[in-house]
Image (cartoon, rainbow, N blue to C red; front, side):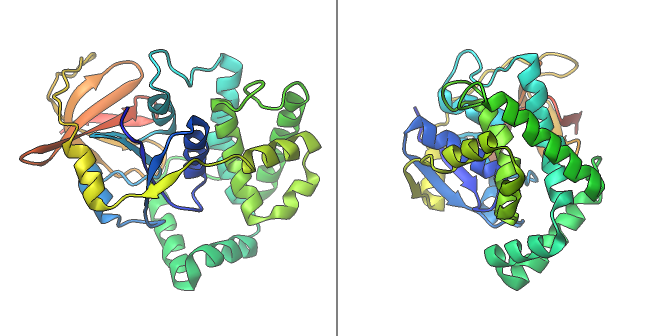
Amino acid sequence: MQTPILYHYAMSPYSEKLRLALGATTQEWGSVVVPARPPRRALDVLLGGYRRIPVLQMGAHFYCDSRLAFDALHDARVSASRLNAEDEALRQMAEQDIFFSVIAAAPQFRVFKYLRGQLGLAGTISFVCDRMQMMRSATVMAPKRHLAAEKIAQYVLHLGRQLVKEPYLSGASLGYLDLFCYHPLWMAAKIDRTLMLHWPKEVCEWMLRLDQMPRGVSRSYSLEAVTEAVENDQAEIAGEVSSLYRYGDSVALSPIDYARDKTEGELIALDTERVVIRRQISSSMRVYLHFPVRGFDLVKC
C-alpha cells in the first residue's frame, strides 16, 4: 500500500477528520503543511484550480473528498464509509448545516482572537479577505446567528441521546460517522472552549475521547518526496465512463456550493459515485484526481 500523504493545515476542521482517520489506521503518513489560503504553489501545479483542503495523496492519486480519502485509507472493496439512511442524514447535517452554523454563531471577537493566535494579524486579515472573496460566488448561506445557535443546540442534544447507548456514534469504536460529526464541534470548541459547559456530558466525554486519540506517526514530506511518489506510480488506468461523456473527454469540475474554482483534465472514470480525471503534469508524469459525483458540476471543455 502506498504511504498516504496529507495536505493540511493545523486549524482546518476538515483536515482534523483525516488526521484522526490516519491515526486510527496506525500507519505512518506523510505530512505536507500548506497555507490556510491560496496560493499553494506545489499543490496548485498538481491539482489545477482545486483549492479545498485537505487532500490525500496515494502515489499518483489525489483524493479531493473526505469520504473518498477515508475509503482509500482502508483500501476497501466495499465502501468503509457506507452509512444507513439515518446516519447519512446526520453526516450531511454535520458537514453542511452545523458547519456553517458554527461559523455564524461564533462571536466575531472570539473568531478574530483565535485566527490571530493561529495566523498573526497580517495572516488573519489575508485569510478573512480570501474567505470573503471565496464566498461571493457561493450557493450556500450561513444562517442568522440566533438560528445558528439553535441548530447547534439541537444537534448536540441529538448526539447526546445517541451517545447514551454507545461510546461512539459508530458503535463500540471510532468510525466514519464520528469523524464527520466531531469536526464542526472541534472547530466550535477551538474558537470558544466555554461552549462545552452547555453541552450534554455524553457529548463532552465523546469529544474528549476523540481529542485524546493519536493522530498517528507523521513525517514531513518535501516537494521532491511528493514528486517521487507520483513518478513511482505511473501505471496507466483504463477506467469506465458512463452517462453522456466519453473516456478521454476534456472536462472541468467545480464544487457547486462554495470555493467554486475549476479543475480541468481528461475524464477517465465516471460512475454514480465518483469522477476521476487525469492531468498531465509533464511529459513523463500524470496524476489522477478523485472527486465525488455529488456536490460537483462536471462539464465538457
